[in-house]
Image 1: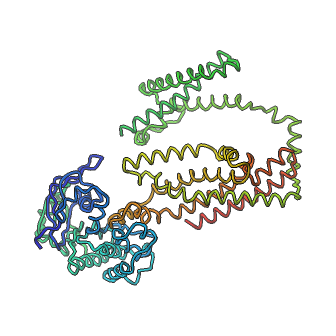
Image 2: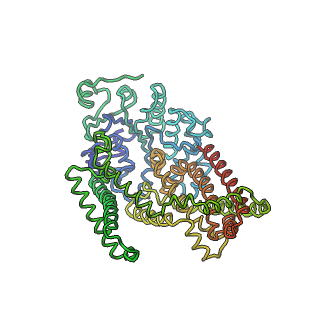
Image 3: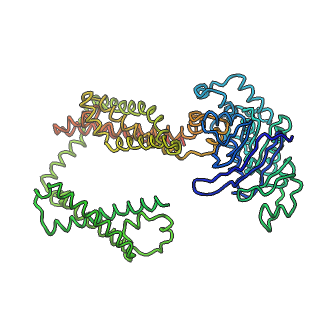
Length: 257
Length: 346
């Protein structure tokens, strides 16, 4: 549990419009942990996740992953290779609405399939079997041939998890995975993430808003404020004082169950 | 922000410059009473034109700095300034009178330029001629109907082939003409290149392309089809690429996070989002092409237009009447059909 899988050193991200989203950020992500990142909207949580799989390009610092500084990667081939190993799910699921569930899950194999084969839909039988396996894992295999936009939000997020798993990732990034779901569905999706973490041993880095969820699922938590790290430790140790420090004075915790 | 201000000043200077130049030319022609020969002296006229443009731009600058808002400034000022402006009736503003004077002068000059004449319009002989024409048209000679039908079939197929052959070109070009895809500096240069070519191609009317191709491949439907195809490629690419520019980012991010290549991203994240509007635009283009194909026939592009110009040249109005009925019927049917298809695709 102590060996870091990702090691972030002095990470900086300044957007072209001058907004400094990440300031000198350093921390480790340990292999197999369920790390939750908390902080106000605009504190840099999403930017941080997107720097890790290079959807955004960091403007400074290092990200060590398998003895390689992935912040320095510049060729598309190298970046695609990195993304093979780091899956991601999103607040708005980001599925292809008009495609079937299975076809969406097969997107996880894009990096493994030649461009021409994938465009003609020629995914191998093993790939399809693997996609079905992960659809079963998130309990939605019976919807495989339904269009993705016919599913509810929670179901779509489970498809997105299956899509990420089909990549065979070592790390799964989750950018506010339950922020657009109702409280009940919220727990279903978080439970599947927990299952992925514990049964498949995939490291999870998850942005969350609700502290009650953090306490329930996180093995460790870090907090960002204005792009800087303000807290790192056990979720159970976040008391009212820390809460006010992270979210600003006079904030009150909202509970969902 | 900086470039926004610059482009505002640039646009304002041109608009106010043109408006001032208009006044200058009107005043000069009233005072100097130029002869026809004077009016053909392009080089000295260009000196006056560019001199007046420059003076107009400077004057506009001075006026705006002095607090008199010109029409150009009012039109091109940034949205946040517009939002702050107090609402005043136009006759209480400088720009209102500026606009009013410009339109009034344009109208007066227009009357002279188009030789607008109530006398000609109400002239008895001319009116008799028009009456004869209408009488012919409203009593069509149905003997030419079979030929007309055959020719309009040719026109419809010209339009179909032009649209169909334009699809693959426009499909591929549309992605290179979309700003959100061509972000990389080298790609952006290519994007600008494609955009320029498309704009030039579109600004040349299909009618002109038809003249070019009728010399190239000979008069007939093939020339008309090629002309329509060139025009369709340019128009469809523009419409398609505008759709590409408005796609949702979500699926793109989703597919990219799986390690998709550029082509895979376009195919899986963008194409599903744009395919229905693409089909809709294409059906509409076919409809437009049928209408344009009849016109193109007038300059030798084949089909019903060529037949129409033949009978019109001989003043055979009854035959022309038949052709007009056939054209109107087909255009109306195409228009309705394409509207229903586009409605169903929403």
